[in-house]
Image (tube, rainbow, N blue to C red):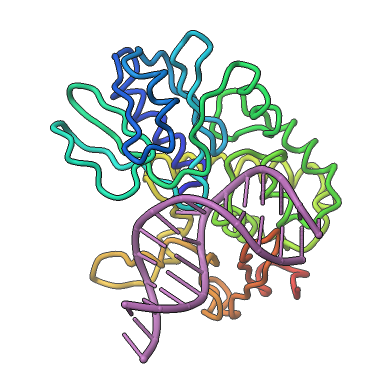
Length: 268
DNA sequence: GCTAAATGTTGAT
DNA sequence: TCAACCTTTAGCT
């Protein structure tokens, strides 16, 4: 589900369907009833993605803030919208379409100061126009934590999650275990460029695919889902490049996957 | 049918 | 470092 690419794609979709229109807001589940009532019927001015956060500007200093967390999802559809099924925190509707929001970590109303508080916690976002390579390098190279932990820190780079962490470090042939500050500016800038490329591809494809076609299994049938990654969730399977078994270990509270063969100095 | 894990973050220990 | 929170799904029985 959601790393930064998902959020930016949702922002595009929701901009197309809801911006400039009067939007109906309801909370079938009831947990966001007050917020929905306050915004109901207003015109949506703008949808802005930042890292893994979504901001819906309804004017009058009222901003809907959504963070999907690990399980949150938006389900889109055309009118007539069906009876809400399951726990729908928020439904957005126009006369033509609707989306149902389930399981978000955050679905709240913020004033401009609240928006600023969220944004201040975030580092540069590779998917934004104002995303800055040098600022990313500055923040990354200040960390003494392992590289694989620093990349998960949203204050270092906003929008990167567990899949992009594992896959980008593999593609850079960098060990997740070295201190972030030890990799040097050249590697930091290369990491930024790669993340930018991977995340943009993710927005376009609607999913994370990092493998080169030459490294995907050769089959006549349709591509399998697990062809999409080099190391993510491939514990114990042979590395697609060097055949060393892929290893897994918890780092920064999440399962980190890496190839000890390709990513030098990464014995754990 | 049940359990564990999942592309995440926060707040307490 | 760990539990809590929100929900769905894959992989067991």
